[in-house]
Figure 1 (cartoon, rainbow, N blue to C red):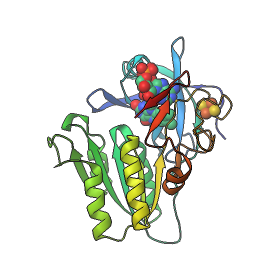
Figure 2: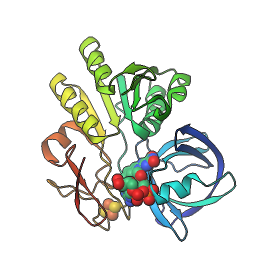
Figure 3: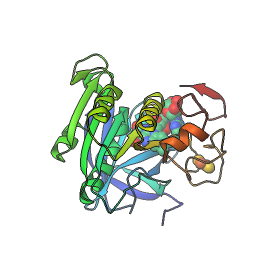
Figure 4: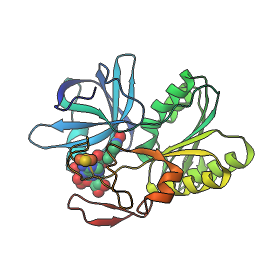
Amino acid sequence: MPTYTPQAFTIAKKFPSAENVWTFGFEGTLKSTPGQFVNVWIPGLNEKPFSIARDFENEIWLTVCAVGPFSTALCEKQVGDRVGIRGPYGKGFGFPSGITPLVVLVGGGYGMAPLHNAGIMHQKNGATVIAITGARSAKNVLFVEECQKSDFETFVTTDDGTLGQKGFTTDILEEILDERKIDLVQTCGPEKMMKRIAEKCRTKGVLCEVSIERYMKCGFGVCGQCTVDGTGERMCKSGPVVDGNYALENIPEFGVYHRGPEGQKIMW
Ligand SMILES: Cc1cc2nc3c(=O)[nH]c(=O)nc-3n(C[C@H](O)[C@H](O)[C@H](O)COP(=O)(O)OP(=O)(O)OC[C@H]3O[C@@H](n4cnc5c(N)ncnc54)[C@H](O)[C@@H]3O)c2cc1C
Ligand code: FES
């Protein structure tokens, strides 16, 4: 059962994951599914949603990119400091059982953090995992070591070619989809990237899941802040993870625009 009031968690571990990106470790479990998220509360400042990057072996990880006032204040927290956490919320990634699938995880930006968590779960279910992690530049790429240590077949792309293959995650995914029989693709990252991936998977008839993050306040379906045009669904309840074909066919704003805190349209 998720918690609806923040519980105090002490930061037990903190390490850099990329430039301006920190991973925080807390002791305990949220009994979450990979792809779900929590709301983190800093008293007197605000509360914001973050994906769960690990929730096993009595360790919870959150990977935070400093982009504005809240995330910067969170990244300044140190081991021993406490924050409030409530959740877990939302619908996470799917884990098909009964077969041994070949799964491809495609992460852009901080997207590889929750995907790595999903990959561990796929492995426990007997799946083989391929990870493609991409970013603008070498200093922005996340979780390469974690993917390699977890024995995922790991590919890296950077826009400027400073690490791995020069280009986009979608270039490598397209090659893999052309050459190998993939059962499932799961992706988290920039929405234009995810839309392209969903379209490619639809063409190839490969099951695909995308993580649609919208501006969230309550996190559990009450405030209506995170509804999407087309279906009116609340992404904190029906998402953030949704089927790629479903998103392409029913959510016209997918990969095109999202809404800010006042409901204003912002193009991706
Ligand atoms: C389901 C979900 C999972 C997320 N997981 C992560 C994660 O694992 N790591 C991470 O670094 N970030 C994650 N985010 C984004 C994170 O919530 C925002 O980056 C953060 O709230 C920024 O707040 P700020 O005050 O620092 O920046 P601001 O200057 O307020 O905003 C910077 C940008 O962050 C986004 N943002 C701000 N507030 C929210 C909000 N309440 N809900 C959604 N987006 C917001 C907007 O796109 C905004 O343009 C996630 C968002 C969602 C919805
Ligand atoms: S964030 Fe309140 S309904 Fe989704």
